[in-house]
Image 1: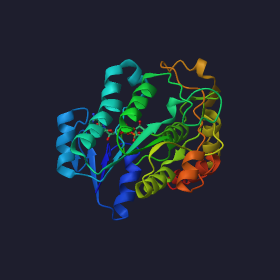
Image 2: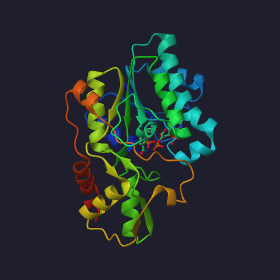
Image 3: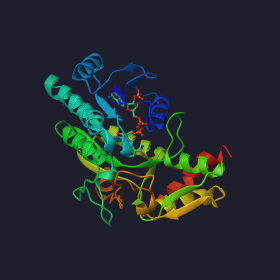
Image 4: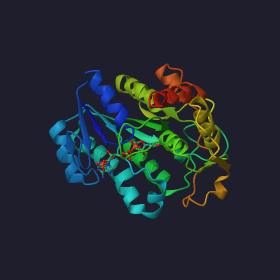
Amino acid sequence: MILITGSTGLLGSTLVPKFKAQGRAVATHARQANADYTADLSSKNETFSLLNKLKPSVIINLVGLTSVERCQDYANESYLINTRTVENMAQWIIETEANAHLIQISTDQVYDGACEHTEDQITLTNNYAFSKYAGELAALRVPSTILRTNFVGRSKVGNRESLTDWVYNSLTSGKHVQVLKDVYFSPLSMATLVEMIELVVEKKPLGIFNLGSHDGMSKADFDFAFADYLNLPTATMTRIDASQATFLKAYRPKDMRMDNSKFENTLGVKLPSLIDQIKSVAKEYDAIT
Ligand SMILES: NC(=O)c1ccc[n+]([C@@H]2O[C@H](COP(=O)([O-])OP(=O)(O)OC[C@H]3O[C@@H](n4cnc5c(N)ncnc54)[C@H](OP(=O)(O)O)[C@@H]3O)[C@@H](O)[C@H]2O)c1
C-alpha cells in the first residue's frame, strides 16, 4: 500500500487523483482534514500510531511548510514540519524494521550560484532550505529516494495557489505584479512530476536526485512566456531585480537550475525542456479561458 502524506496540498491535488485513477492501493493523509487519515507527523506518537496501523510499503511524503517567509520568521516551525516529520517517519522504519521505501519531496532552494547544479553543489541560504536539507539527511537514514524539485501548474485545491495560478489570476484581473529577472529556475509541470514519481515508485532508486526541466530560465522570462501562450495582457507585469523586490524579506537563491543527468541516467528517461513544460501547463489554463 502507498501512503501519501501531506496529500491535501498543491502537489497532492494532482498526484492523488492520478494514483487513484490508476487503481493503485493508496491511503491519503493530512494534518487537519480531507484525507483518509489525519495525524500531526511532527509528533512521534502520532506518526508511529498511523504507520503501525497502515504498514505502508511506500510512503510518498508531500508534507511541508513551503512559505519561505514563514520558515524564516518561525525557524522552529520550519524544523518541525520540514525536518522532524521526516525524522519520525525514518525512525519508524528503523525501529520497526519495516520493509518500506520513503520518497521524500525536497526542493531546488538548496542551490544558489550561477550554474545548472549537480546534487553535491549545495548552498543553503534561508531557513526553508536548511530545514528541507535536514529532512533529506533524515530520509537518507532509511531506504529512500529524495527528489529535489520545483513545480508549476494549475492547482486543484482551493486554498493553494501555484506560481502559474498567481500569474494567471493577476493578469486576468489586471493586477500589477513585479516579476524577477535575475532569479533562475528549472521547474517541471506537476503532471510531469507525478509521472516521474510513478516511475520512482516502480524502480525505487536510492539516493538524492535533481528532478527538473532542461533549459531553465528566469522567473520573469517564464512568466512572460506563460502569459504569451495564453494571450494574456502583460501591461501590468513589470520585470525587476530581486534586490528591488521589497515584498520579499527572506533571501531567495538567484539560481536554482538543476542538472538532471543523474535522474535521467538512472531511470532511463529524458526530461522535457522548460519551454515545453510552459506550453503544456498553459493548456491546463486554456480550458478555463
Ligand atoms: N510548492 C512548491 O512550489 C514546491 C516547490 C519545491 C518543493 N516543494 C515541496 O513539495 C512538497 C509538497 O509541496 P506542496 O506545495 O504540495 O505543499 P502544501 O500545499 O503546503 O501542502 C502541505 C501538506 O502538508 C501537510 N502538513 C503540514 N504540516 C504537517 C504536519 N505537521 N503533520 C502532517 N501533515 C502536515 C498539510 O496538511 P494540512 O493542510 O492539513 O495542514 C498539507 O497536506 C513539500 O515537501 C515542499 O517542500 C514544493
